[in-house]
Amino acid sequence: MTFRNTAGPAKHQAVALRSGADLSTFYQCSFEGYQDTLYTHSLRQFYRACDVYGTVDYVFGNAAVVFQDCTLYNRLPMAGQSNTVTAQGRSDPNQNTGTTIQGCSIVAAPELAANTAFATATYLGRPWKMYSRTVIMQSDVAGLVDPAGWMPWSGDFALSTLYYAEYDNSGAGSDTSRRVNWPGYHVLNSTVDAGNFTVANMVLGDFWLPQTGVPFTIGLN
Image 1: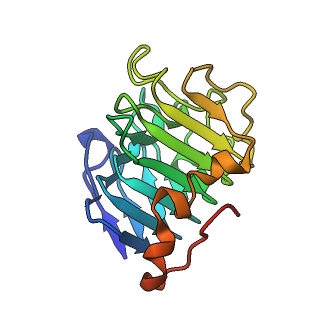
Image 2: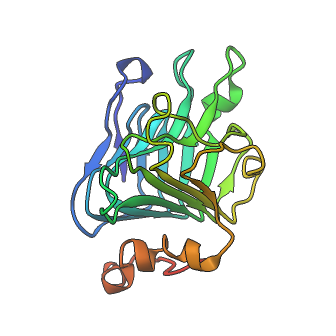
């Protein structure tokens, strides 16, 4: 099933799908748009073997959400724009929300890969709200991702209160040696720390995902 917003990049924010349903599960779906494609609004969500296409903040919201075996396609934005895969919206440190991208591929869509007219920087995310929380782990990160990895929202907003982390990634864009030097950014080396962001702990998936019939990995790969 495909969810597509046809507004195009010049229309700015244009959501293809908004989900605010607890235990919502998407399997082998495609979400296509430019800015703000997939609004993971709230509660517990799981995406498996899906394709997500976008440019600016194209996975955003404040759900507790895990993406597994998905492909995140960065499209060609308007000149002067940067691509940002995520814009997580956690506004309170007591909220058990966040975005986990596990075992996924972060790549250039064909039109971005073929573009020679202007340069486009691509980042893993930026903090929409004060306590933004996103973890990229065990994923293939293509070389289109800027060495800094992450982009500020505005000045130093949330740079000390966000939680951004990377764990056991591969690919030309996965090198963390030149990443941002923010208080809230972490390179994880412990399976215990990374385990906090798995299906088991992030969305308590062992209690409800088996009933969906959708394949899932409960812990780390």
